Image (cartoon, rainbow, N blue to C red; front, side, top):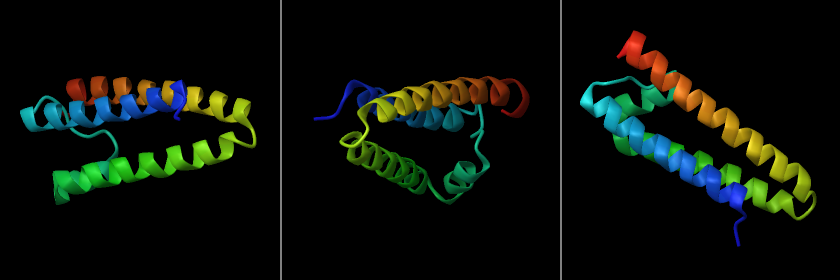
Length: 100
């Protein structure tokens, strides 16, 4: 069973992925991450595949290591979610005003 921090990060990545798709296809923003922007140029399928493969590996590693050090994993997943959310919002604002 996945913990709440894990579910929070999963939901955050899903929301980011879907909002990126919507904002970019509507012309409101561009992808802030140049590597992920490169995948968008290849195809949206490539973008989503890389996004969710990366998420899957991170979650898999976190859940595996949680058995050894649950406090460490909980703290890092929370930190990761805060950092991810900050970059998501910051990137959306920056590209909306300066790069979209």
